[in-house]
Image (cartoon, rainbow, N blue to C red):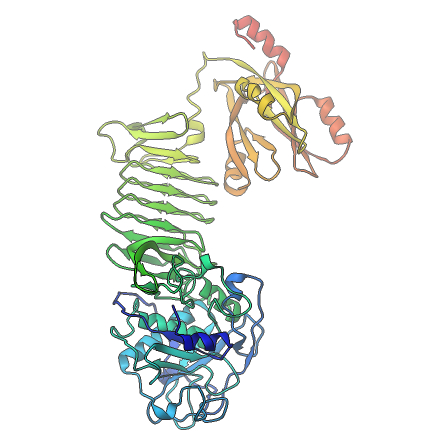
Length: 636
């Protein structure tokens, strides 16, 4: 948020205190908290206690990590003597008018610029204390920081102390960062600043508590120090330690404030204290409801988890990739510093780096669901949805409506409502689609991209096999299979397509023609099987297989191999005119050579540097195929 001039001067001077300027309004919002990782005083057991004059927990330097998202938020010191990242346990307490304070020069000596507790200390009421506990729990949920509540006495206090005091009316609060002083970790809330809605989640008051606790744990503002965040990243969607609610305008304000630490805050605190890998390890479901406002980041340490959007007429975007921010709930309203203009932003719910959410379920409007590198279950429900899988073996269920189902990389399955016989599959010229016959299903007309399997109510079929057509015994055409050598990367390319051959000279001059390698069929007829071609995204080469099991393993596990097409059809059994094709792998550049010439195979292996992968598939002897074409009146 924007800072008063006094706060800016303190922060620029590298002072160990930081204040936050007040907002001009705040609003109530519902937020849900899980079990608080904060230990009440009655259950704390043995704990090293701080006193009003000394700390019980030592401090140590925080090293930078070379990541601007983290380094821009790291203060100089952390709690604990361990090497970062390492856990820490911290006590906290609520001060009142009877509390004792250190009046040492480094703490609250009279006449210093620090808050003078002697001139005004007021106890937090039960509602505000619960807000502090919730804010502490939100930080403890993401990092290895354990908070233990203690009751203040004349000799024992918390490492972190919370109280009201009287500050400048323009200063909402301030906190002291970790240090070897008694005041380190103290958080002062300004009783003279407006706290109209208290500190309910979503208000400026609650985000102030999160912000100041962040300082008390060792985080700084992203605009301070030697490392700062780039302007286009310095906003609430990344960090609540900023003074900019939005990147649209410096010093901007938000009508709805963050309810959790945000993407970079979590990264930074985990760099200091380690990640809380015990938080939400079960199968969790996160439900977001139309009409509610959200600004938060999800940290989830394990399990098979789901984000659900409950919306009837409002579309949502759920992006499961770590570090992504989804559009869920109300559009968020922002104002510039002078309150002269406002704007809205749909981004509201982030997924923390290191968090895997496996599944997403849309509402009843046109939603967009995006998967990650895990096996995802994407469910669109009603509406014309767009579902995009990631690297894993995904299941995409568009539901009613005309949906776009894009499996991405991996062995992906589209769920189609109704029976196999109730649907027709077609080709638009750019995409496959599936549509129900009239009155047979509510599945709609779905566009299929990078989908390998179709799951109907009565069966699951391979789309790769299905779209190649049924075997037609009378449609027999022999085909040349030609070999090309890529002079740029020493990879091989095989094709039986006359269209591809015609396209190569002008567009791929680096492909040197090496003649006919073997013969095959260019239609799927009885006794023949498709040979599948995969493009290697790393080497620029190609991989060919006739084996459906090997094909599916490649689709599932070898994400750098992209399925290209079924390039030709090879015999599935030995017979007249049939010969073997062998696969050789180059050990240095990953190229694959396919040859039916046994002399060539022997010569290549004798030269060294190649691995013999053995039999690849069967082919036709070109001379025999030519003779059969002459007999059948076919052209080869």
